[in-house]
Structures are given as structure tokens and as C-alpha cells.
Length: 210
Image 1: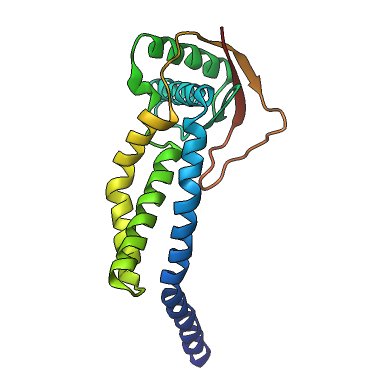
Image 2: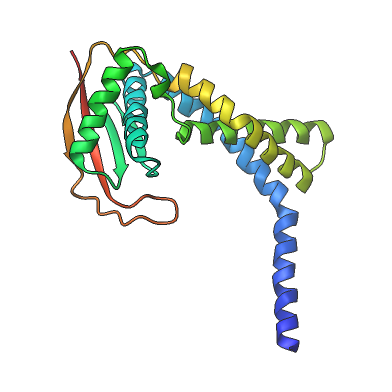
């Protein structure tokens, strides 16, 4: 019983220590985000081909999920195409990519936006960082309350801001001259899934502008 009590004191000490230093860690994290995130967004915004493939990636995942429900698919736009990762077959990915492209050409621009896009997480981090630094600068001292307020602000504003950033900065629906070349399986990838990563395979959907 005595050792258990000492163990609780030991754990409580480190929790308290973490809470004391949390605002300082969050401040450094916020400064880092305020410097790096805008550069990431600008890099995407200045690359039209990347923005188009980002939109096609979202459209492909949206088409698959409209048929099979949420499979926690992940993806990433690249200059020559986009990656799709998850428990799906290659023929389904290719069919969904072609359907998604066709729908975008028909004006279904909403398919270019996806609620789980990493852009939304970037936006939430940016909101939290700006809010925290602003409140910190206004109040002139660190506090755990400021961290909680920043997280709340990110929760409330991150999603709508992420939608706006996706629509106007990181995706493009100028797909009239785009075509799907084919789907290539990443044979080097043998993902088994995990707490956050979906199991299954990873594919590269190659696109081309004519």
C-alpha cells in the first residue's frame, strides 16, 4: 500500500510538471505552425497541377464512400497523380477515379472537398496557434487556460476554415483537359493498419493533362 501511494505521488508529480510546462511547449508549437503552415499552403496554391490532383483525390474517395460508406481511406495529391490508401481493390479505385473526374467535369464541385482532408487539420492548427499567440501577447503571461481556449477555437473554426482553404487554395476543379491514365499498386507497401492508419493497399492513380 505504501509503495502504491508513492507511485501515485510520482505519477501526480509528472502530471503536474507536464501541466506547468504545457503552455511553454504549446507556445513553441504555435510559433512553429505560424511559420511553416502558410508556406505549405502557398506551395500548394502555386502549383495548379497539384491542386487539380488534390481535387481528384477527394472526388475519388467521395465516390467510393458514397458506395461503400466510410472506409477511413487516406490519400495525397501529387503532380503526376494521387495516392489512395485503404482496404479497396484497384479496379474499384480506377472506376471511382474516372467517375469522380466525370462528375467534376459536369460541375459537381462539392466532390473536390473532403471533411477528413489534412488541410482541415492544418487550418485547425493554424487557428489554435494564432489564437494562442494573440491571447498570450494580450495577457502577457502563460496559462493552461489559454491552451484550452486555443483548442476550443480550433475545434469551432478549424473545420469551416479548412473548407474555405480547400475550396479556394488547395484544390482546383479546372479538370476539363484531365484524364485518368491508370492505377498502379505500390508493391513496396504492406500496410496492416493501426490506430489511425487504415489497413489494406496503397495505389497511385496516374493522371494526365492533354
